[in-house]
Structure formats: structure tokens, C-alpha cells
Image (cartoon, rainbow, N blue to C red; front, side):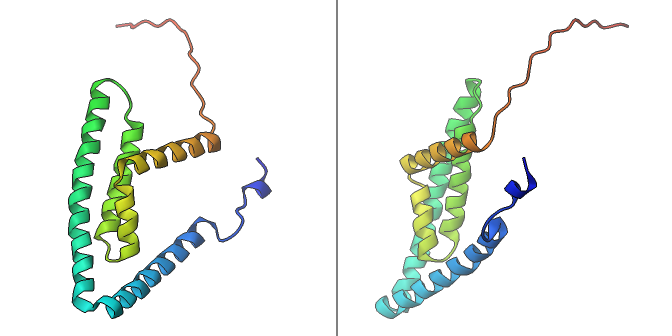
Length: 148
């Protein structure tokens, strides 16, 4: 692979993270101020607290469901790769739901919907299989013995 082809275009990963960490809180703050003007302070505060509490309960419930599926897969001798990724998404959803703000709450609630999570797993798996070549180890046959 040539070095020129390895160079990234645009802001790159860390530039995108910086934009994400600046733009999302700013959008959340603007939305909360707007809702506070429309609904009033106390209803807006109640909305934020209720989505956090409901979200934490839902994330816990979904987390235990995914954990049960991970255990069943392992008991059957299969690698629970899909279930582990879904568990990661439930963890991220829980973090989004505990973060004050409506945009992160919406994102968190969406990640807790099992069919949507399954779709995300399929898309990420397809992307990763295209992006990375999976090499299988070659079997080498040999004889060995143990000497005392």
C-alpha cells in the first residue's frame, strides 16, 4: 500500500471527534433553551429527568437480555460476536440516555430498539468485512513427542 493512499482526506478521525464534541453539546444546549422558552423551565427539567430515568431502566433491561444471549451462545460453543457488539451498543445507548439533552436521548432510545440494533450490526459487519481481509491460519501438520 502506498503512503499517499494511506493519507486521509478531510478533517480525519480526530477532527471529526472534535467537531462532534463541540457541535452536539451546542445543539443540545440550543434545543434545551428553545424548549425551556416554549414549555417552561420545570416541564423541560422534568422531561430531561424522566428520559434519563426511563432510559436507564430500558438500558438495564436490554443489557440483561443481551447478556443472556451472550451466555446462551457461549454455552453452545459459539463465539457471541454479534451479541457482544449489541452489548456495546446498549452500553453506548445507556451513556447517551444519562447525558442530559434530547438529541442524545433520541439516539440512545433508538439504539435500544432490538431490530434497529440488529440492522446496525449487519451494516457494521458488512463494512468491516469489506474493509479488512480476514486471513485464516494455515494448518501445519507435524509430529511431536515429549522427552523426559
